[in-house]
Image 1 (cartoon, protein in one colour):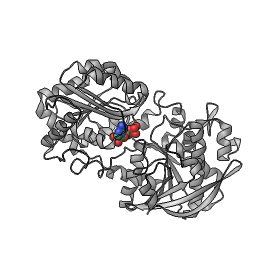
Image 2 (cartoon, rainbow, N blue to C red):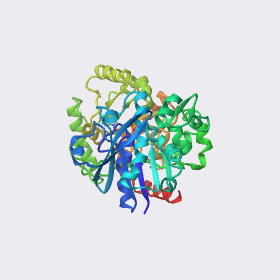
Image 3 (cartoon, helix red, strand yellow):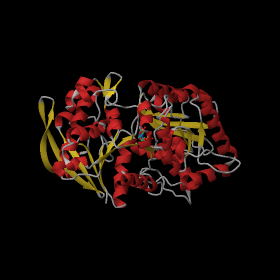
Image 4 (cartoon, helix red, strand yellow):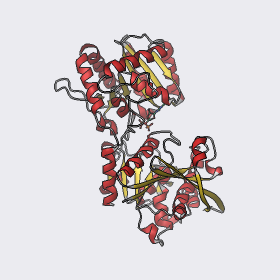
Length: 479
Ligand code: ADP
């Protein structure tokens, strides 16, 4: 039975800002069902809902040396759904209302967290076979494992994995600060180790020191070895390509199931999705003050409003998309001010056909996935992406750019062979996207049977964690 400890900065249902939280929230549970002993460790943030804090059990506390200070580090435990979660407590670092802050604060916060994780193993008396680190916030753990604990056989026997959920975020800061807070000598800050263009990088540390590197889709694993996607780490990733693989994420079938979803207007399954989706669509159209007409193509987006998610393409051709009076669009997202403003402007301009829901609203996101006919996701890059898989599970056909996980999970429609589960375009080009949206509209309006057959194929696809969890277990065994 393999013992795994997931080191993470966020995890559903405690705290979430993105896909990482969904992954760490779902994967350990599935691994345990398959006979592993997978546990999770994360900071005890102020933002964790009180009901979970009330259930936590205090184990013990230790002190972590941070430069010239000695910092309290409480260790708490919570068992839920067959998974043991550990929480690192320190009010000074994690007591604030948000989980991430300015980078200069995050560097010290997560240096503390990574040190605390390694020290805590002795307190919880759990020495995993694999320390499974996620994104830059835990990137220093594989480094410190080798730098500080080389003398201890229990630590020496451990392997580490660095999983990259998004290569763009790297935890880069000046060498001196990182050396201080991590208690590392300057020998570690050479170009073959932690140095990153005269600064130093947490994520690079993880990539150099981990025994294995994974990312969240096979296509993204290839892409990040190139200049365009490599975020200046492509040289290193090429050098480590023998120890780099991509395993596509799954989605939680408990949270995302149209047959049992409590947030949607009307539950449906594979047998009655045509009727079921019709009810959901009409109800959402009603709530958004749209024309309640089943013949309008309702397109949704649920996303962070950033350049990564292709918002520039959307902005560029939104007028052309809406030149077709039979298209309605609903946007649910928050992010960069400029994109929020663009969407508000279009909501005003196309009142009754465009809705800009500028907020984070989980319940509404479920309604959008269930009610829409199509889901737009034209990302510039996409390590894996969950939204397109959720859409397909709800019979909502994705229109995506062929990059990263989008390419691995959406099979493009072929009208002659009657295959495919969505629409895709190759280049990061607004008019290619527009062309694909027009194709989707034509199938929707003129070839209803093809459209519903495609919805059925999409809903039948397996996006559960089952297959991917097997791949992780296989990797743990190989290590
Ligand atoms: P990323 O992790 O890059 O943001 P993913 O597609 O992997 O993108 O995951 C995004 C997740 O966050 C999905 O579950 C999506 O439904 C959810 N989400 C994004 N924006 C919002 C929002 N404004 N309201 C509710 N859920 C959102």
